[in-house]
Length: 620
Image (cartoon, rainbow, N blue to C red):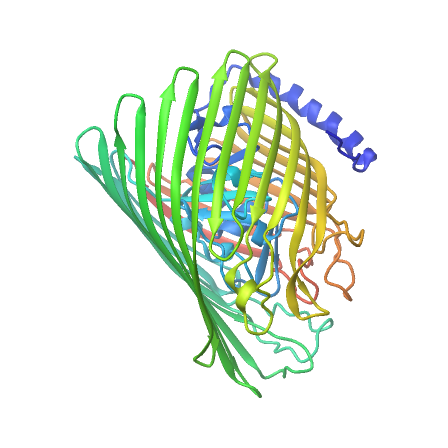
């Protein structure tokens, strides 16, 4: 595999540092770590260190330790991840993972795809509140053969709170800068064959004027506030020892203020928006034989986005994405091998319009059949996935993932993979009356990776060289005012992540060096940084736990006609103090150095903010 050298000087600086990190970590080999199990890397349960795709897990403990409130803020510290926002909290945003934009990053909530079918093709990560989340799995790279359309840059799967043994209750209340307040309460546990998890949360903030008035014209200088109400419910019932039925329901309702600038705006215009996400699933899981298990899911998800402008020219818009998914999966556990197979039937719909007049109403079906094999024996491990997707109105697509790992010894493993992927255009890209193009073709992508993993006790270091080529990229063409397949792009780079524990100190770090380029023009892709670095630690000192996280994002180009966006460094500090066995006092300083930075030209991000709170958790 040919991978072009990326900034040799940066590599030269990074690789010795990673080697030193590995050597320093060896001082704590006597420690043991709880086994982490993942499912997203292969659609079967695996120990994290056995997963061949580059996978990261963020559990409930890591979420609480971060003291962050929304999904996008937590992911911003992970290797290869960027989040940009044109405005304050809740406003239009874009996710980048390995240089792939939102449309090419598949986000699942309890297995349900969350990509919008409107003309944004975005995913509303900023409205998914961490109060309702139990665990997050991030799989980087090209995994369409495992999960279908959209997984060019990777998959982010969110698992909401679930029933667990014993009975627990919890309550968190916090207040902070900019009139911010947050309350979350819930309970979870099991009573005989019945399991339950119920959580309720609310968050509100006055916000700031996110528009940079020196870079824009006619923007309203008012503060852009945000409010989100959320809940999650999980109910399950064991039908004997081999069968279970259950219900999951999640709800996020974000309301936000935003600003529009330009010659058509006035400083007195008021702009408000809302995003309401509902996701409901019923399921059955059964053990059909000692080696054969099966699961049947039916899910319905809706996301309704509305905007309202009051001013010289008042109007409202609405767009509702509807998704229904019926999936049936099977798993067979054999000696040294796990076989999996499944079928999906999905319907996708969009209903959009302005001032109550429907301008776009479309629906399509998407069917898939897929199979996989995971093999582990001695020093050898392998994974093979094959998937066939048929999307109504578009050509059928096949995708494949082939990975191989070789363990040099119990700690070191070499890994290589080849994968193909595809990404179908949303219904809005195809049929919007103003910008749609029914002749659009699906994007296709090919990725090659080679990497190394070092795992010992609580430590895991994973470093991957990747090369991804994408053809028929879906972009909005400013010349035709339509969506088009206008170019091909490539991204080559090095991606490294580390997590571990030394005595009472938890450590994590990530490094991404990449070069996302439009091959048709030779220009770098907008808003993608070539260098991303993050590091965090948490140190327990008796009843007090102190934490810090630093994140660096390199300079990057903005949209055509705008100056480049400057690099920035952010520092966050946290503290927790155990008042009693059940009560904890906590505090957080975000952007502690009060850095002034932008993720999109014309829009400022939050200054230094502080939060203090109190949490209670009844231990089982």
